[in-house]
Image (cartoon, rainbow, N blue to C red; front, side):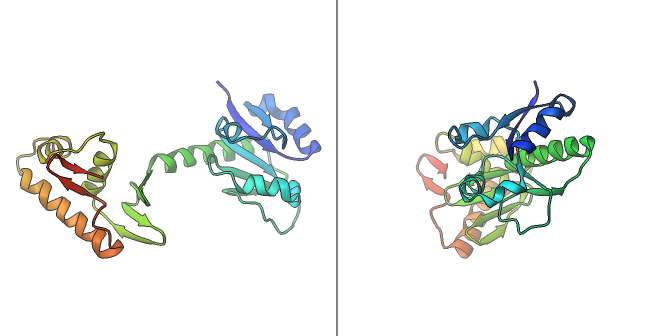
Length: 209
């Protein structure tokens, strides 16, 4: 199955992609302001933008609203770029370089997306081990990352025994007191930094987010 690319460009820009699409090895979806939708963006692995169309405020507004896919900006002239982008390259560029840029950008985006979880008003970055809210963050441990992700994915409150089995996997040095200690430390970090004592909820049924 070919990778889909969504192309935002002038007529000449689009025609250039038509000429190389077979060699490029991607399926191309062309921007149409009348038919544009977020589902069209989601169906593409990446978005390729011609810098020349960024002068059009209507198109610029649409591009800057895209959050579902990475954007590669192809710049063919020196100008003030108002368009949002994840990576920019200058034309001319070889076919091999263009292929590599698109594949690398798409792969990196997928990796970053899979490493990040939105929880309530927070963002959990599993790679950086950071829990962020607004412009503030705390550094957390690997166990705390696992704990937050476990509670986030659970469809019901989890008991201390449930958490112990899933995270510590019957380690010889772990017991339910270990779970309580880790949750206490994590809740304290969140309370001290974000003044939030409701991030992890403890009820008679167990722990939940």
